[in-house]
Length: 333
Image (cartoon, rainbow, N blue to C red; front, top):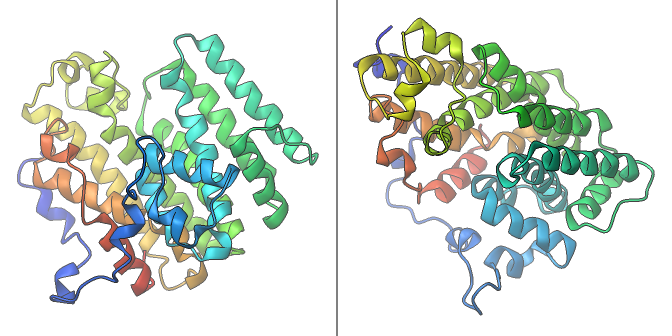
């Protein structure tokens, strides 16, 4: 199925912000994501200064997210205050693992870092966390919410496998990776919120898969700059596209068809997750706020006719804080 002209088949995307008319957002909303004036490198943020209570190890997690996972940081700010530090800890743990592959020059070093986190999880469940900020905050979250160890281990194991830098053979391999990383993180987030519900778990599974697919798409230009391509080979072969086509930033119809097929799979998962909306407890909705950013990216890539290298896709969405707030206020995901 060709990408050109078929974007409309997805139906209307977006959050219907215009329905709010000219109402101004709450005064403090934009402050949540804006650095406060201060010495260069101080990292002082309004979120830290206005009620997050972030000092020491929890401040470290907050700042790690703000600089390395900005969308996750914004989503976390909208959690009820009593759960916020635990969510920061989980997302910071995920960032620590996610950045290993790109921050080491040799696989051996990456394996050593993964081994550190494996031992750290074991020590956390023995009430003996190492003196590392994320580890300490993760230990607090585990103690506070009795988090399931299996999900933490799954995330580490899957990230460790990914150190191989192997291309996904098919879309199912990419979905499995997303399930074991992104979905596992959502299962833990639901535990923080005290949600034990099969419908919420099903939604988390599909949102995690959508997140993994979108992340793979968003990272394609970056990976291409490093002479690497991780898009599923089965879809590339279906359209007669080689890795070199992506390395050369080829923009012909067949390349866009590859992106269309992959993006459509993410869109299907997002729709499937939303099909459980009426059955999922409202208490679980903060865990699923990331759907706002996912939908925003899928809408943008549709607008550029699935040109994965279009500069528009690299532009920061300045309305994201407002969109997240609206979705949180509407109790939707």
